Length: 127
Image (tube, rainbow, N blue to C red; front, side, top):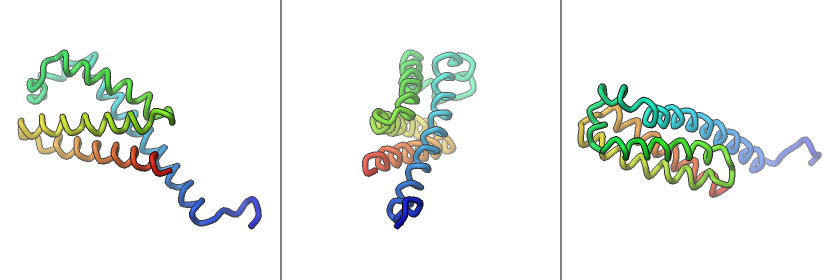
């Protein structure tokens, strides 16, 4: 096999790596927007979302800061697994909050993001 040819497992690993990077960047953008809203726009957005009443504003602000810290972790390879696991755990909290307020769309979104974070953590662990 010459240098330009790659084995099937190596090609699959490269495709998985590319997929994980794309998912990490998309997740970083989503969590970046979410974190900014929780930290800097809470008063404006909390009026329209009943579930923001489930926790004190200081907790929402702390969660927003956590999300902003984790977006750095999503793009720094040594921190990706930890950041993804923290965000997956946070999704469980949000699922509970949204169940309490019967917000089906938000339950689904939180579950999808949590599963995405779990997939990223697992993918980076086995790579």
